[in-house]
Length: 228
DNA sequence: AACAAACACAACCGCGCAAGA
DNA sequence: ATCTTGCGCGGTTGTGTTTGT
Image 1 (cartoon, rainbow, N blue to C red):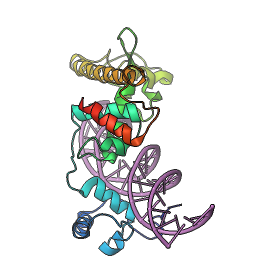
Image 2: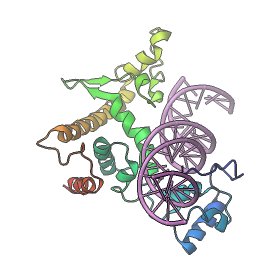
Image 3: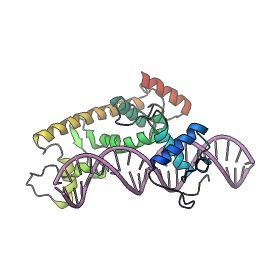
Image 4: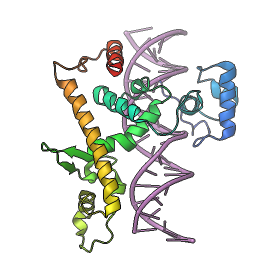
């Protein structure tokens, strides 16, 4: 249902877009407007499938797209919304002008979800480093041995586990400093997450009932909540 | 300098929904 | 009521770049 023949069957081009293709697509849309994606490739003379054209336009060529690092404010909004509505990236993107759903999805998967899963505080506030091997899409770089001077033999069985767990404790002064700063950052993120979670599931404080999602009202509630 | 590991992000794929025939 | 078409979304993969050894 609704499935289009894949690019291979139609001998269409796949992979990265060239600047020439970008120019053709942008020019065509500038002259004819968005929409009618199905007929666009043929009319514009592009050997691309409709989906590919649409994605390229929406995520890259369309005007007003912000590129570069997410700000702290954007971070917070993403965390808030992801926590409350889940992986509804297009919905979240509507609250971040200039950011696309794809951008946000990528950012979440490669930055935020890892950061939030990596550190969980115990009740006493102590930072617990979660075994990265258990985190889907985990921060594998962290498992790389950081303390090369350590003469302690490593048990191959527990190697990655031990390496990830001793990340902060065994580092040299300079590295230790930045690791501590990272932990502080993680702490802030975790406490923000916990605050939001607490709000969401505490009947007195919940700004809206996420369990009875009504798209329209939910969006209004969230907008006013974000502005508050 | 060379290599490997990890990151960052662009693009693809499959599915589901809505509208129209 | 059913089928087809077009579109949008979220998950996943692929690839170029960066970083550490």
